[in-house]
Image (cartoon, rainbow, N blue to C red; front, side, top):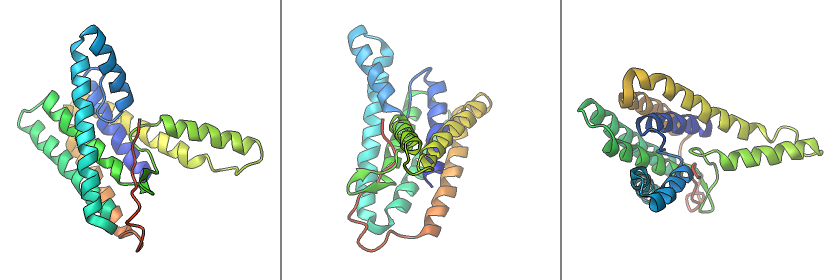
Length: 216
């Protein structure tokens, strides 16, 4: 599930990156740097970066509230919300809506996705950014080399591979479909939703713990 969400994030982020010529819809560290530089230089991209950050934050808040309301069915409810936002983007692309408005919806969807995996109110798995994952990968590799668990680094490698694979797929389909490729993203997210339904609700007592998959 986590690797699938990372792939979804990579796919959607690649579409946004290519559409916006270098800005992101899921990687807010990069947008924060662009916004900071834009504040000093007056570059128009700085204002757009700030708008994407705001949309991402709104998505996080909306997904968190929805997840709390859904209680033990948080994962399923948040994924359903992400699907709705991606479908809004896909339909909008078919109606000729392009550019900034559509990418703001995409950023909101990626922000909401951060509420799928949480533990004790904190993000447990980052799926829309990989800086923390790569740090943990390096730490687990160091531990394996010094006598620690020999394979504890593999899950972090798989998360990174998932995001990169999704990004490659997004870059491949963008020249063919543009942001209409969001239909593919919505379809893939629906498969993840079906998997979440098969997994079922959180164990009794676990709903008080909040879990999320993005950071950066």
